[in-house]
Image 1 (cartoon, rainbow, N blue to C red):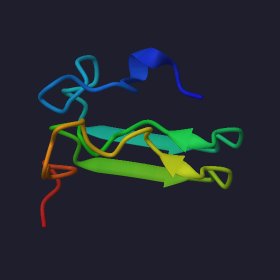
Image 2: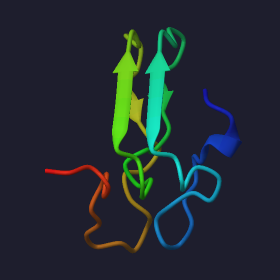
Image 3: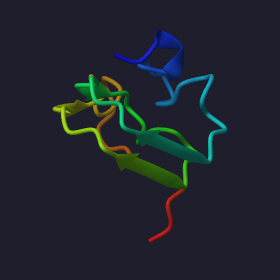
Length: 79
């Protein structure tokens, strides 16, 4: 389990406060992790690398904030 400061919860605009400016994140060999925090709502995240995490069964406890009809995940990632 990741610590609460990693942004398991999101604010009303759909982002966490502490990680809002993160541009790149690498999670590697976290063999005991079964859940990854919601990362798709981070507004500036451009690069996400996840390796060696065979026990992950779920990403985030919720995909988007409640009441949000449609929200773009990974908004900074180019198409």
